[in-house]
Image 1 (cartoon, rainbow, N blue to C red):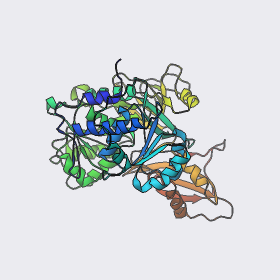
Image 2: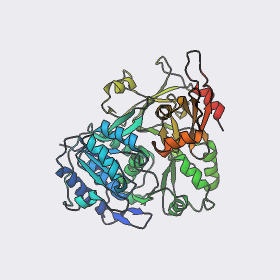
Image 3: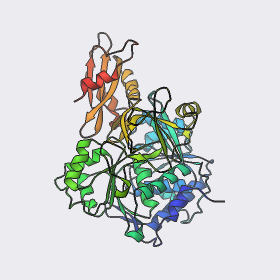
Length: 509
């Protein structure tokens, strides 16, 4: 029986010379392809020894490290379900994710073990391990006792490989279930469309400077390199000076718009400094035309912008090869091969070229559904199987898609999704708060930032700085609004609904 386990396909793409360097860290460590193979086998064997149920979730909140990458590969290899969690999540968020996903294993940093283990054991999790960015922790200690070979566990294309939590406008996070087939099909499409060069063609080298707890860094970047047998230069954290130095040895770089803005602030950025790079890719947030143009001017390179979601991996992309067309700033390119994309009106009718409507997609990378939310899953798909993305945009005559907004008031700040309803829920629970509204406004560095507009209860005096401080003690930093204002009333329409478009215009810098 053919094994559709994603790891089997990634492992088959490893180069013949397993002693070659697969991942070189910014601290000078080199992990060979054999290291990735043997270490992931040891961790997979350790996980298998725990006698976990089929489809068991492995929840992971750790700092970026090659060992964390190895844990991901081991989870795939064992045909278990990987659940990455943002390192900025605090107790309220972690309590929800652990209770909802019911993981059999939780892996966290040693520093967070005390409070995370309490949440995990309370929710019925049987095993909690630690993993630190300096190659220490109980996970590695346990795994070191197991064999370095492992037969890749059988998986079908429809088996869940990962669950990515994406918050909803109600504040309740939804777990998008991505299958081995979803992830492998997208990796192979991008390998061809982005013209990845095999070692026989001179080889690509990916500079990896993204976090690995979401789709961009974990699936698009890592799968791209591994399915191609390409070396990665690995940055534990984004530092513009380090990235600029390593770009001289790279051929592919992927970043969110914020990273490009910060690199543009470096005096050393020039065409000569990036002479070896063939492809710069941007995604996870809208790229400002100013950034697009400045990058062209400073480096001679045209950034390739693309569009994807947690539920779908990559959907569209500007062309990589000149024969496929021109990279157009302000657009996210055309639908990828094998993917159907349409723009529809409120009544469900197909819209003509250039008209703005809701974007719907269908294809092999579109997720299986939301974890334990069959009603929500059914609601988000049309009768003929298209997923309603919630994004609003239009398509031109050449098939290029432009995203003009998000129907659910999503804020994308520095590449991270921020859902206003979730933040409003926490603000409204604070003493003295009557009501709040959070909106996104443009920001040169982060693309968008949140502004919290708050109404006090009668007779109460609220301090904006204190509201933000209380939020910082509860929520991940990227979710915290950058500004808070206290007002007497919120603008409303005839039905009493808050007019967020008025607030956005009012507080736009």
